[in-house]
Length: 256
Image (cartoon, rainbow, N blue to C red; front, side):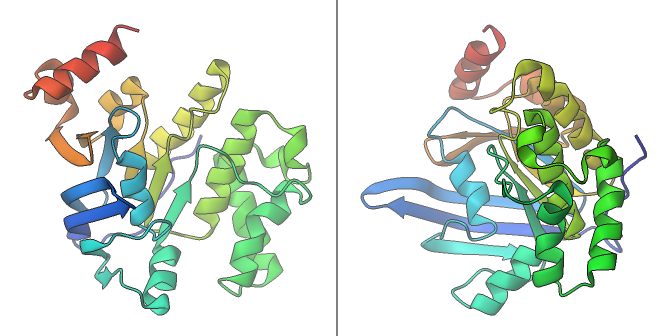
């Protein structure tokens, strides 16, 4: 697979800045004052038990969820109620979900080119050309005219990744992208993610794939009960966790 070239980076600055971010669902506080700075080109893996707030957090970064307190600044633009800001940020931030969210009645090519044509106002030719480049890079150019139902789960997730990348985002968010896949398909999706991680993209990935975290993360962040409990380089995080909650979580995960 060709090395995936990320967006050009002129200087290393914080592309994501979160300050004291809170999020409630009714009485339940899902995020309790999250602070995080992410540098351009940094790869961050977010771990944590289910219900710890990790998915809520990354969904707040492109306003799929709304934070109620604190500040989130993406590439210099603050996330507020201003729709122009939200739309601008969504152009910068691509998201890949657990479920592939492909339209079943559209071909792979139509799924990928829909947003570039309607949102970025590109010509069909330009959108299709870029879509083919990404389908080639995720290893499935021959699937362009098929429908999602004709593909395996791993292929569908790779289409979803190609669809996200065709929009030319600077930041990629992954929300447990392999958890709905059969075990034999996980590797093919992780291989694509590894390639992207080495290609200069800024990545925040919620995943339980420890091998991926060890191999490509610049930092591992552990969420529990709506807070960042611990953050460290993977070599330290996995061999020498500081917090009791982190140790407990790693024991459960690594010995299953």
